[in-house]
Image (cartoon, rainbow, N blue to C red):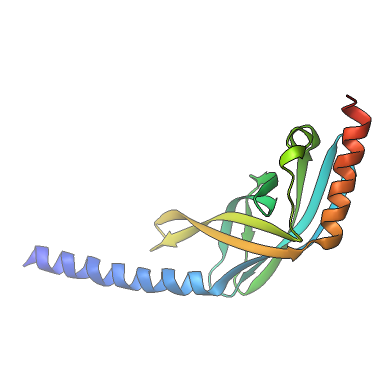
Length: 170
């Protein structure tokens, strides 16, 4: 009798927490905006903002952000932010991000350089989800944002060509 009661109570708790989890995932959104490229010494600096909207009734803790920037099949660069932050319930937070792109690596792959007019920004965000306020499990959220990069691509090609002319004289 006791085992049935314990299993039943655990089943009810699991069902409630699963419903909270699916509701939590439906109320959390992450989008990127304002992607800009600029020269930064021997690198290219890509700056953008991640807008995290928490429409749930609980605060969430963002543990880390990581991702990549690519155009077509060409990977432009990666970024990673290990700084944690808390997003309050029913709030929107904007997290500024910067990725430094290694020009040396890009110029070595210049022959394979086939960019499209779309730039894809893929983000992987790790947040904590609390279960019964006793256990916190990390939950990964992936987002892909596409930017019309016609102007950005021509600027990127120009930066790479200028870098190749200055530093990689043959």
